[in-house]
Length: 243
Image: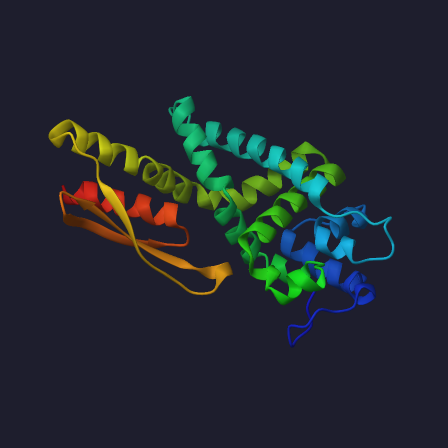
C-alpha cells in the first residue's frame, strides 16, 4: 500500500484495519475473513522477500478468481444476450476478461495502491503493470468467492461488469477484423494485407503502439492501442470501413 507521497508503507501498517476497510468500501463488500483480502493483494515478490514464509501470495486466489469470472460473466452474458450463439458469447467474454480490461477494472478500484509488492516490483512500477493488476483483480474475485460463496461473487461480477458489456461486444467485433479483412483481400485479389509497426511510445508498463495496414503498397488505415495486436485489429476494422 502507498502513503500520500507514493512510497510503500511498512508491512505492519499496510495490513492495518483502516486500509483494509477503505479497500472493502471500494469493493462494496465486507469480508468476514480479512486474511483472504490480505492474501489477494499480496504479490509473490513480497512473500519472496519476507523471512516469515508462512504467509501466502495471491496466486491460488488468482487461479480461482479466473474461473469464477469466466462463470459469472458467462452467466450474465446468457441472460443479457439470449440470441447470441456460443461463438459470439465466447468472444465477448474473452474481451471482458482479458488482461488489459481486468487491469482497467483494477484501476477503477485503485487496487494498485493497496498491493503488497517486493522491492524489485516496487522499483519497476509494478503497481501500474497490467499483468500484476489483472492478477490481483482475479485474486480479489477469488477471495470474495471463498469468503461469501458463489452468489455473493456473482453479484460482485454483475455490479462491476454490467456497464462494460457494450465494450465487450465492440471489442469482440474488433477481434474478427483481421480475419475478415484478409478474407476480403484474398477473395478479391488473392493477396493478404501487411501490418507495419510505425512506432511504440511510452514506458514499458504503459506503451502505445501505432500500426498501419498496407495492401498493394497503399496504406488503408492507421490505428493506435495499448498493444500491438489491438492496434492491428483497430487498423483492420478501419480498413474494412474504408474498403
